[in-house]
Every structure is written in structure tokens, then in C-alpha cells.
Image (cartoon, rainbow, N blue to C red; front, side):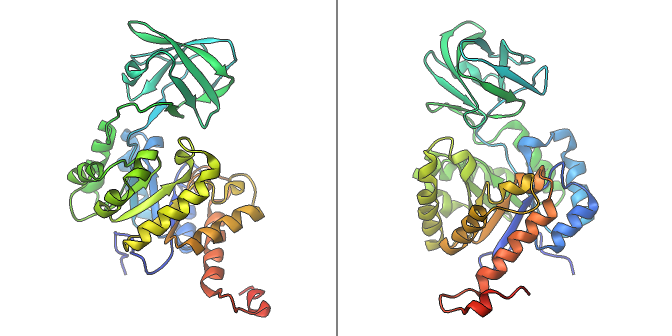
Length: 348
């Protein structure tokens, strides 16, 4: 029987898995589906628009598990580099160009093209989870001159955060094109990245159409402040703890997660949690103890879905990662405070 192309609601805990270089293969997709994946996610930030139609059709040929297109949304990223990664040292200077250039140790450009014109002297620019930090020291006609304040390596298509609000469109032109492709191919699940208002959701839906599931991703302070109006306009909410930790202190994340889950559940909407669930399994064949406790704590808070990202997109063990999540859900669903040790120790 053909599975519904829209993800189920709040009755069962869902497993969402991102597909990428490690998992875009027929047998792997089939095994992940068999292990319990409810929704396969395509991250548009890491998928070329020229490849998108082929990727969607390939996934659809492998499984009847529905597909979700996850937009780029209102985010800034690094553009093309002359090498896969470059090193920047404290004391060095870099020109951040307004137009697109091929990046090297002295020159960078940012996506969306032209966004760097919004930079001003004394702005702090964090790249790739605080891997590199630049400070704007001068604004010229075609570029900003920046000092390197924290050294490190940076790569292509890495997230960039400025220490003040930079105006960005809720959807990129690539997002709009991708949604058109998705609608033509029957996609009914779309995720709006960096949702910051109910108006963002309305705009997104004007492109996706009405008879779809819009998952609004909370990954910014604006999104937190406008959570209720966003939740009221979307079919589901997803907390991206990774991008959120670029804007708030990491020690605040567990408490923000609890409040967001509680608020969304009170409005009878599904709530999914993403980022670093099983980060160890990107390299290793099993998770660590802190990760499995985090997953179970997230379920105890009331999360209705768990999202695997790097674990299944670029990790060494995509199928095993899904199986670990499935087993944790199974143990959680049969747990009560009165469950005996004998029952807890069952392995079936």
C-alpha cells in the first residue's frame, strides 16, 4: 500500500532522517526506511538546484516514505573557495567582497550574493560555529576590510553569524525554484528554515500551496520570541539546536528546548528536535552515554519527532543511527516509573 505523502501527526514518535553523500544509495535508503524513518529530508543548503529533481526522483524510486524539502531560508553562508578549506590566523586581514569572488586567505564572499553590503565597521562575523571570527574595520566601495580576531579553518557553504540583525529574505530565489520542483513532483512536506514570524510562514505557504505540511524551524532569537504566532501558522515546529546555539548561550539550549516543546505541545502541534542527537555516530558505530540520555530526555519532554542530520547525511553509520533511535523510542514507550528491573533489562 502506498504510504501517505504527508507525515503523520502527533500519535506516534517520528524519525526524520537527512539524506546526503553517505546515504543517497538505494540499499541504504531502503534499509533506513525499514528501520523506521517516517520522513526523508533534503537539505537545500547542501543540494544544488541543478541536481534537485534527480535527487527527489531517485529517493521516490527507492521508497514510499515521504520526502521533505528543507529550505535555505534567512541565513548567510560562505561562498566558493579556491581550496576546500582555508586557514586564517589572528592578526591577518581579509576582504569580504560585495560581489562573488573565489575565496582565498585574503578574499571572501558571502551568500546570498550582495549581503556583505549590509556590514558596517565594528561588526563581528562568526563563521562555522565560532570556528573563525572576523571584525569589520573599514567599509570600502566594493568590500569590507576585516581583521582576523579568532583563527581557524573555514570551508565552503559554512554558516555565518553577524552580532547584530542583518535583513534577510525569508526565502531565497533557490528556495522558490526548489518549491516549484517539489510541488511538480508531488512533495507535500516543506520545512521553512529560520522562521522568525507568522508572516514568514504565510509567505512560504504562498509558494508551497495550501494542502501541504509546513514545518517551521526555530533556530533564532526572533523565532523564539514569535514562537506562538509561528506555531499557529505552521503544521509543525522543529527546534534546530545547532543554529540556535549560534545566537544563544549553549547552556541555555536545554531550558529553551523544554519551554519550546511545552509551548508547542500545548497548542496540539507536532514538535521535532534536531542536531547532535547521535553526533558520535558520524564516526563511531555506537553513541555515547550522554547522547542516549539526551535523546530519552527529549522524548520525556514531549517531543513528537527526532531528526537525524549529519549522522545520516555524512556519517559512517546512517542505518545504524536510525536503528539506535528506533530502539530508544521502543524502550521509552514501554517505560513507566513502576517498570521492574526485569522488564527494563529485556532485549527483545
